[in-house]
Length: 318
Image (cartoon, rainbow, N blue to C red; front, side):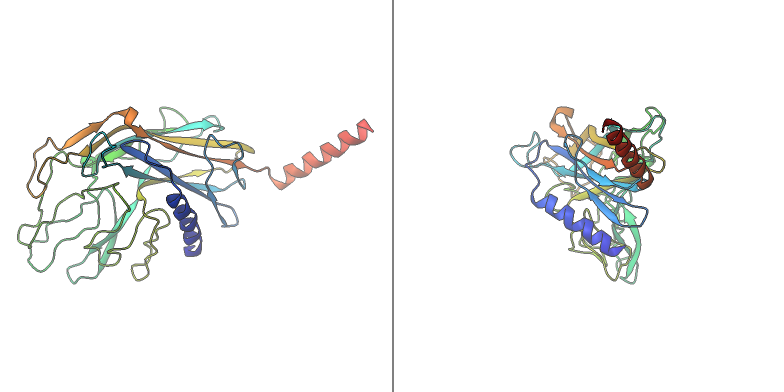
């Protein structure tokens, strides 16, 4: 499986290197791949607007991952911003989804390892957990490996029943207040949340005991702390899966479209606690989404029937 992750990462790296200029202040980027019934992995690099789609076998499990990119340049509507603070999005059908199909909830992506008091790698964390926690000691920073997108404890997975075949209102946000230092007795600052999410290439936090300095993103593999597989640099935040078992052959596609977003203002001192006023909303028109689409190839038996039918038609014409 690690080989397949490396393969997917290689495709994603190519996409990162050739990616077009930022479309909005907040962009969503989708990476998708199919795990076929024989466990082979097929990268899905085609979009809803493409004429020829990636072909995958019936019964494949399609994984789609969503990353965020934030523009902090002078071209942004919030120049100098300190990264993502809020993101809400819908995953909606482009075409082809069977009637009544219920999508799976969106899940938070892994963000790195926590640090144990002895300095070794602890459990893998995701983006909803804290960047630091209070260790109550001067010998241990309390690095926790998350980004702090805790969504105030509310679910992030979205609504999968309001519109069958879609996921509505998924996403997460940083806390409503900014905590500059959760571990007052340890030297320096240990904030609850991570700044600059979405800006530039993503690397795991400097306090990560297993992955510090390595790139995260599409293709990352944190299943073994002793042998971390890096990603392609995208700020990977969410993922989910689609089970194509029992579906008819044909084209299928979805779009991930942001509906609500905000960034951290560049005008405040984040070495101090902030009770509010640090979140700047980004207009929906200044955010851009992404899509993925594939062709579900006919079953071999169906191909045989098509071939027999075609031969019979030729004979009748003769």
